[in-house]
Length: 447
Image: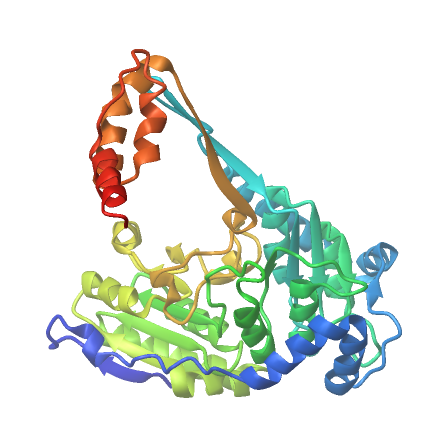
């Protein structure tokens, strides 16, 4: 089922041997540009046209009321509501903890206050149609709420009946979303980025979507903030040894593969018999899965079993692949964690499957993919806040640091920078700085 790669006799250059990722598909850029510009200039009218074109439905109004959210909350199964509410508690608790950052730094008379200010309005996108992910509404909306964002907006494509599914609406109620609109695709991103007669523009847009949504988010970056994480197809690297039942490792490979095509599902280990046993278990799970075609589609292009010499080499492979999810289902899990540098999220030990992180552990499941974990991070509170600082300096400190400011400013030819500290010294003494002399020279030459 998984294509085998044997690195046991390879040199240290694993990256040259391992499959490289294909270039990112630019997608329907020209079509999306047209949609963005149309919505930017024609607002609600353009949204209605594209909803009719792509969703095959005519919408008089795409506004979803708060009453409709809470009606949906009452309609969903009791156990689902309880699970979503428990997820909310875990997510909020985690992100509140992440807000605990030092507020003030003191250094010999120089005080720096760390100012944290939330953005005022954030936009969330949730898939519709066959893809229904109420968990993504919580994972995107709750960090924003903890950050202190005043207004949360959610866009989701309408179904054939013109409504958003109850699970998504219920999650929006639980997350405390302020405004919900039955709009999908690039037109939804345009509406949130530029604003329309009905929808006020936002400052940040988050949430997964199809190729049109992904392209639209790239194109509006700069008009609004779009977190760096490239949220593409699902990925997992499972590192496993003989201490974990093979069925556990096998199902965790399948878990991410069932999301569908273009994903990545790798198994890494240093015992060939263990790898073969897990591979056989994967085949059995695939045969009995209701999402068999999606799993096969993923594994046929992105499924690999990698044999290495030891757990240190296993981590080298993981750091090269930089997966969205990294599972350490092995005896040395705790020893391996400090060695991990490139991964969206790490799950340690046999009892820590990625599915717990997807729903209930607390951190967001919106993670960097496509090897972007090498330079970007999980979605979190920091994506919804801006930081600045307020500096206060007393006289003694100013006198102490003034020579350094003068020296650097002079070297850079910035006369006013130097003079701004000179005139504030407790003993004011006019000086001839290098900056002063340089400027005088330029003036004398008429430059």
